[in-house]
Length: 527
Image (cartoon, rainbow, N blue to C red; front, side, top):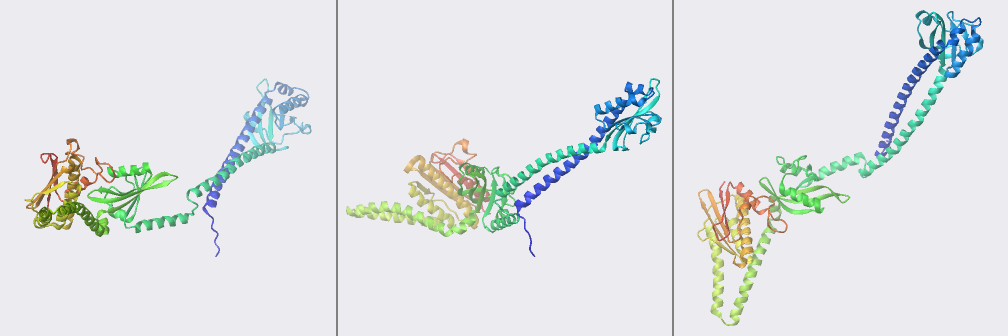
């Protein structure tokens, strides 16, 4: 069966035209009805005024005493009729005999309508009725003589036919005026419909509905959390993964972003109109990797799309790459160090200083073996041992002395997740210590690490000879996003430390009595 489909543009145009037409029609009918009532009421009052004017005319009153009243009254009543525009002015005596009429043939004949109401009740009346001239709006008023007696009746009428002609003229003007809003309405209907069509990219409602469903399905199929935010920093939509991650968090549809670090990133995207990628974000007790992309409309930022991945997801995808990269960095650091020593050994051999060359080789081999042997015997957790070995290699590259207290010992067996959190703590603090020591003392920078476990507690002391932490900064250095360094992706390390310490039910505090810099003490309870 053939089915006619009307597009949205046509539907909108017809709807607006229909509404404007019906509105105009109803207003026109209302005005026409009101106009009829107003005109009829006005004509009735005007007829009453003319009737009273004729009843009080001295010439007409005196004419009743004349031997031939019509000769006196007829000219006077005709003058009143012509002056006021009434269709007829009739004067009759108390018996109903006419003394005047626009048609002289009716003079002397009884009136077509009864005058009893006027003569008996002695009051003027307005009514609509049929006379010899046709339907008319009439008014009758009693005529009083000098003695206070009713001697006759003045009757004035406006023919309905003439009133209708006048009403028709008024209605025609209303119709002409109503064409203006109808015409304007049609033009605006087409304009608004076209404008709406342009705003919705020429799509039909069913196409918009399908695109919305398609968008929702696409977003839900993405295994990363995807969130959209408007320029007022309110969450407008979330995909399935985002709802799973943040069902009990501040990132909910309709809520405003209150995380300081995230607000800062959003402001950067709005001001630069460029995306931010691979930014670290700490929400609650979880670290996330965040991408921000602006939603542009005519080069104006209308919103932002957040793509959020948990660190565990990133680690799962990049374990092998991370291992290769760590190995590469260690090899690069060792290569740099060994290249210098190899050149020295080559020089000694060239100078035939064989004993000194042998001493350097023996010392280097013994140092490496001692470090590895110490870590293997003193640190039971392989992840922590690997972290410390990596930091030793890194210190050599930075030309900073990283010393591990030989009395240190860690025999505790940790859960994998606890090892991960503890590595995050000591790794970030050692990195910060080496950077601070190198910044202040160049190649004389020094970092000292000691650790032990007492019962259910693990204690790390990490000392450096850097510039130290000012008293005023102690309360804010662990704030997410706070940093004194230049460049990107800073301000997250100590926030991660604080979060990881909390997950381990541990504590961290600062002491300035070591190495001229500061000592960060951390302790954690095994859980």
